[in-house]
Length: 264
Image (cartoon, rainbow, N blue to C red):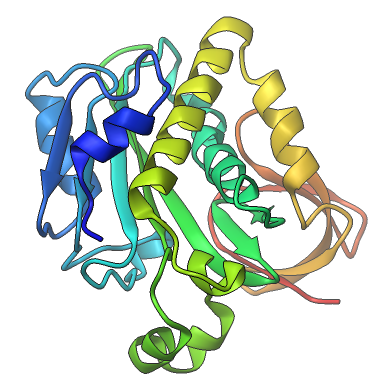
């Protein structure tokens, strides 16, 4: 079944998300397409969806396999009254909304810092946030998600090789095909509610919910980024979205970018 705006809007319960809509057959990247609209003054809550991404990517510029007609590729525009340093914490709205929508299907998703959503240890979704600012506040924030909804394990393995073994899909985990329109509406509705919570109460409710769904706290991990790899035990996530660890020497360290892998 193709994505259909009427079907999504019929199921959607939201106050702000969905102020304007774009549904495209294919784009290089939904974030890039929405960025152009944001710069042209698109209103907060604008949603851009695509059936296919021809150059989708995730963190660290890594490609995101985005075949047509089976998954969810979506970006949403926000204009929160926050300084740029708070954007990573605000961006937790995406992984919280994704886990809400997946839980509604009877599954038990978890979040792996900073933006991976896993079911049964397999990555089924990821999100990527970007922002622009010309002063003390962010001009806009775009939150983009890629969700493996109905793509098959065979297709993932064929496209990703060995990396495909660590990926999964919503439909595969549920053992049935998922209605992408209903899932999109559930995700966008939850995204709207978490953004409203952030606007009314600040980041703390989001952080608490995120920590409840996090799978890394307490685990020993290897961190790869600039310089030599190092190991530490995860203490949690702070208000600015940094991963906080205690390294082998007992020093407290904060990580904002890089690859984190479970080491125990």
